[in-house]
Amino acid sequence: MIVCAHIPRFELAVAAGEGTRIARQTLVGRALAVAPLVGGEQRVGEVSGAAEAHGVARGMVLGEALARCPELVLVPGDPVLVAQAWETALRSLEAIGAAVEPARPGLAYFESDGLRGIHGAREATLAAVSSALERPVRIGAGPTRFCALAAALAVRSRRPLVLDGAEARRWLAGRPVGLLGFREDTAALIEPLTRLGVRTLGELARLGRAALSDRFGASGALAHRLACGEDSPLRVRRLEERLEESMDVGDASSGEALKRVLSVLVDRLLARSERRGRTLRAATLSARLVAGGGWRERVVFRQALCDPERIWLALSLRLLALPAPAAELGLAAERFGPPASDQSALFDEAQARQARALRLREAVAQVRAVAGQDAALRAVCVDPGSRVPERRIVLAPIPE
Image 1: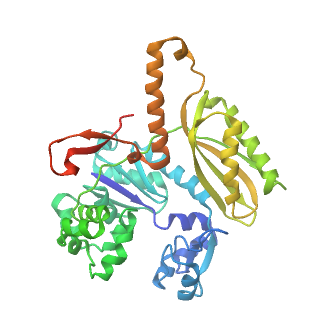
Image 2 (image 1 turned 30 degrees about the vertical axis):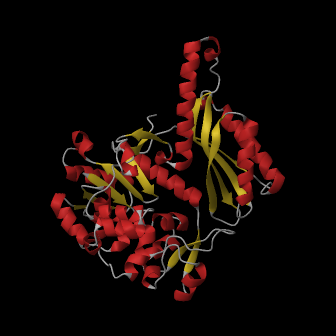
Image 3 (image 1 turned 30 degrees about the horizontal axis):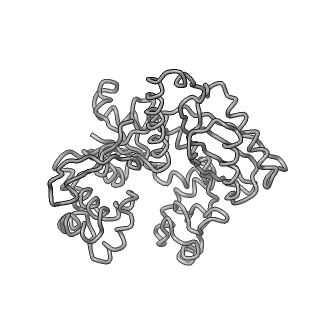
């Protein structure tokens, strides 16, 4: 059984300052929206229920949002604080024994069957989720990730909604096609399906997988699978040690002075004893802005590095995207690579072959860090004599 934990308007509540007056206004009908970053695309972020009632939606152009709701209040976005709060929430779920797949801030999935030995009945597991998060959360459970999401979005109280087997598929047929917007691969289908008059997932399923695949390609086939109660297995996040360094920049809020602050942060991060000689595969550069809010960007290096000069060079280019002067600069190591000081392969041919295999696995891991798990695949001959090209060779994952 897959469990979905959904915290409504997580980014908006965190950016507004949880527990403050403006955050409480989201509960009393005030129209709020996360403002777009300075210098970025002028589209609003997460919106409150009152703003949705006026027709304002996440991703809408700022001018259109203000035209639909003139009393809309814009809250400065703070991706740094959102990332920190979401990491705390994920670690709280992992503390109860859950192997979590985070979808986006405020939305996560995990498998509940393995937690019976810890918490007992399913109801006790769901209650442990509410206690661990310590904030209003909607919980749904179903046989697949998509069914659990639909159940969590339908909840209007603290009581979880649990769906089983055929009941889940029948219930899913009556849900709106707007649920496809929560999946990146199918979000673009909502507008054309609405124009075609498709309102529910049941109507979508009756169109047939072949017709949807012919019209929309792979995303259409995926949408049909989701509407029929099918989904891919969970992809549990890998637990990696996280090292962080930050510094108040003072008057060095931009330009060359800010790059010198970044150089100090790189040296501090590489000097941490917890690194244990490992290289860095990916890092996160963040900043708290003088005018309020924050900025955050994940950087994946072309190869695992431990040279401070090359790391600084790769990161300093990203400072050009800083939307406003910074008050604080932060740097965190997201993923680690292999140690950089192993020279034993220079003297042994067997170890040299092993080293080449390790470098190949390292290259595959680096590609997956950049573009996801499906970025590195191998061709496997299945039916060389088939007349259908797609049956001759299939793509399979490369084992790490």
